[in-house]
Image 1 (cartoon, rainbow, N blue to C red):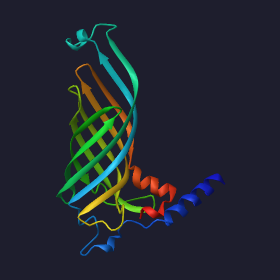
Image 2 (cartoon, one colour):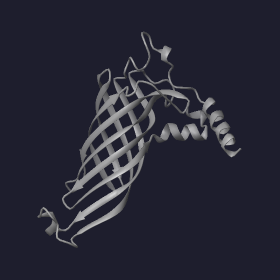
Image 3 (spheres, rainbow, N blue to C red):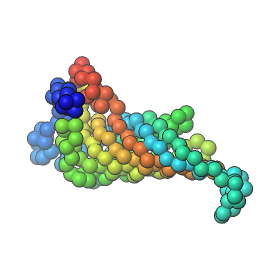
Image 4 (cartoon, rainbow, N blue to C red):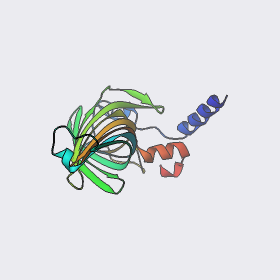
Length: 207
């Protein structure tokens, strides 16, 4: 009974929102056939993984002496944004920036779209997307990430030009970070917050 009540409430909220541009809203094909020149999005990321810290002595040797290495679990929270330019029909290149705690990271990314071409989530037709990121942070830190999930174009405030699109969605992300004294890897989920918040709270005035 509770599951049916939750489903009914979510369905009611979803139908109270206008959907993204339909496939027949574009001359000569769907929005998938006409990639936006500029596509951008924001995300909240929460992950958990492992960190490996090395002492100065261990960092200079191939095999760290016993007792000089420390492994521990790590939570990873980030707030980020990305923007990309169309490269080909199924690929994009862009830049990203993320705040992890009090540290800022940034770099470039390659995005593969249409993988697969159509995915229906949250009652809206989207597509699969794969993102490969690389970048740097403070104190000679290097970072890379692989993210895969769902995305769909969305109108934020009024009628946005077709050449510039905001993307909603959710992705699983594996993140690797390395510094002179530590490396870590985490597995987490990235969720686009603006569309998700509006979707859940039913804020119609945002349209």
